[in-house]
Image 1: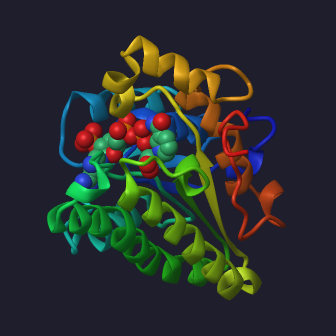
Image 2: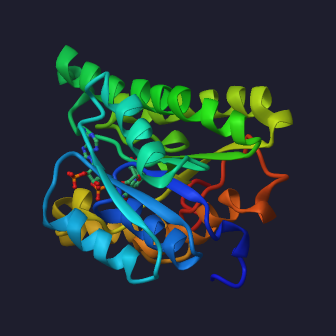
Length: 254
Ligand SMILES: NC(=O)c1ccc[n+]([C@@H]2O[C@H](COP(=O)([O-])OP(=O)(O)OC[C@H]3O[C@@H](n4cnc5c(N)ncnc54)[C@H](OP(=O)(O)O)[C@@H]3O)[C@@H](O)[C@H]2O)c1
């Protein structure tokens, strides 16, 4: 992988929600290419220490930043800390999200507000904090991790799905505004991937089969399956790709 994306060597990357799951796999992918990484989680724990050790095993710098993205001061705070500790920020991957499953008739104000603040507002605020640094450097990459639910909304995740679609709209608007500044902005909707958030749901044999059968390639993905596409978009080789919505889902969106 390092041989393909050599341009990522020395880049400074912040990946939200990279203590575990898809974010961690992306962080390791960047480290393999020689990029320095700011790992992020809600709070300190064993998972993010493991992630740091894995990133550092590739000989790059890893720092840890913390905070609940539902709190309005956190996005700017973690970008500032990344800039301070890595010396700048070249690539922002907005990966963390919260996801509430509930029948749509039972959705509460609290459910809506929590997902909107954590998933939507924080994405905009992370971009607002990071882009001025990218403009100063004359180079930048922003990647948001979306969901197959943009195309196929789950009946019990009405708000989560709608926010993922709204983020694509923001990505497309910003990609135009930043295109001539050498900053690309892309969205990567991923399909069903084995991570902590769906372990319980997928432990049901019948549901597991139903999900698997809905994926054209015939299997549920692993976090590593999401990495190559993100690295391409972040690399110099991906410079002519912006405003894209790159599905990594085994064909499930069709
Ligand atoms: N897994 C899938 O099947 C799937 C499908 C479609 C889309 N996605 C999208 O892919 C992305 C990654 O999902 P994942 O499955 O890898 O997630 P995950 O395994 O559930 O990991 C969640 C990550 O987000 C962090 N996080 C959780 N709540 C947060 C909050 N309030 N503020 C800040 N950070 C928070 C966690 O930090 P702590 O470790 O500190 O808790 C952790 O690093 C998400 O945007 C998700 O919507 C996933």
